[in-house]
Image 1 (cartoon, rainbow, N blue to C red):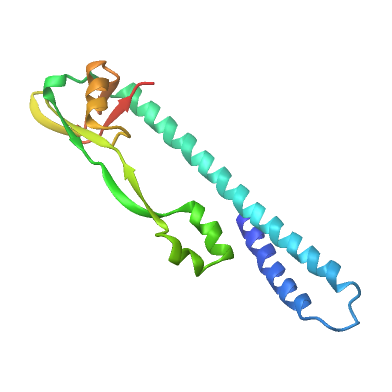
Image 2: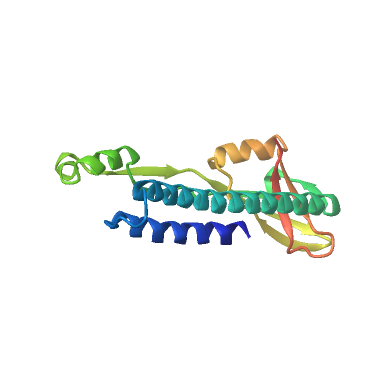
Length: 181
């Protein structure tokens, strides 16, 4: 409901701002005051949309966390055996625009192209593991999600038993790798 009111406020604000920007009549007193009030109405609409989406995201995060905790309590907990793990890197590099260059582009859009390249290379370091074991007498292969560190650090966490594998007792296709804090 907040989102709908926010959108209505923004639409009304845009219409009012457009009208009073070009208004030259004398019938409506204080057009500048009306213009400012419509700007405030637009900001209020943006705030309503932002707060509504933030509230929804918070509720979704709480729901996901409760589902994960419920899954962990009902699943079989397995500490990983280092010898049954295979560690793989998923690291990559990509080009992103330099955030400091955007300010210069705002004030002098053509001058920056002459000075230097405005992109920087960002290196994303991540790794995952595959764990091969038998579950209820059947050989199974479990592939983890990506962890935000390199394979040597992932090996360290497995050796220190910081990573736990949770497997659903009834469906081996449902599993979760959890990094203990």
